[in-house]
Length: 503
Image (cartoon, rainbow, N blue to C red; front, side, top):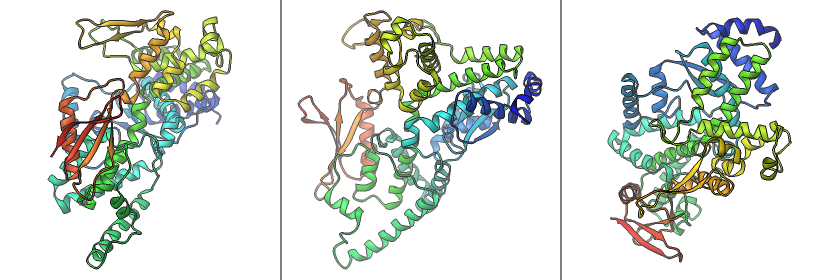
């Protein structure tokens, strides 16, 4: 049966506010058809899970993953969210979606049929295509392996708890979690391994450790061992501090090195999500808006459905004004959606201003630019490239300078001719990772004498470290490293100045 022969069936099923599995299956089939034929989306296969509020809370606590290793923080987050939800202090998302192959999405069971169709278009088409197409996810994550890897991680942590004790495992994971932001590779693509390959690698490490231990009693360790070689010669400057500790900590047992590896793998998996929040949500919102409207134009949806859809869509992109008590910064759904919609407008109906600002996009194929932008940018570069004067005017954006030495805030740019470029650069910089994660790297340690680990902090835009957070970070690094840790600050002349020590 062709998709167009199902118009009357879809009208009837989607007009019923109470969904059933047949209507979900039909919604997935129709949105997938128009996603491919109308928006040219390339997606992973979809796996749609209908969950209760308790299951959604559980997914919240595990950061969306269907399984994870045990840790007290996941349980704490679950209890906090559960209490807030039951007492009305927070609501739950309509859906949650995972960057995996197949792409798993959780849909709340108390959604209406309209909401089910909306979130299927949003998550199963929009987010799914973004995960598969954006270069950050393609280069820094492995959608095919993450679920298997988390099964491996859970089993490994459970074995460690049995063998080495719950407290020691939890303390190691605490330290690793505290350093997660300093445990990602920002410039090199991580290798991809399946669960079978991970187990094989672990077996080889155990064999190597046993063989090296026996040899140590007889002669000097073999120079053919890559790990021993690396420890002997020390490491170069390394931006991934967890990786440096895992490979070079002098006395860290092998099972703790594996725990560090697990946490930094998870941190690496979530690294692109923090870099693409505006783009990802804007792309998915743009996708569901166009797919639902296309379905209505083609006769698959009735007017009553569209009225409910517009209510939900308007709620998603609602941006409270800065003076509202509900204001909590820019809504990423609104900002991303407005920019993608504006790109389409510039392609189809450019003004003289658009032609001056976007000469390569004005009057061109909007679908081509829509995919190009989705595939090749992250939030800061996306904003710097596509945030137009019209969007700045429509959203009434302005920039504030907050100088702790001054009594008052200063408005440094508004949405006018002299402020557009400065405003765009200012908003873009808010989403640049170096402005909210300090640039701290591990310098080559003296592994033969003092075993002191030197950390170098490179201040960017005069960003200052928080004293308390710096001390806590040093303590966690000290715990994993096992020897004193010194933190230096690189000044403008390139000279390292000692900031703090952890003995």
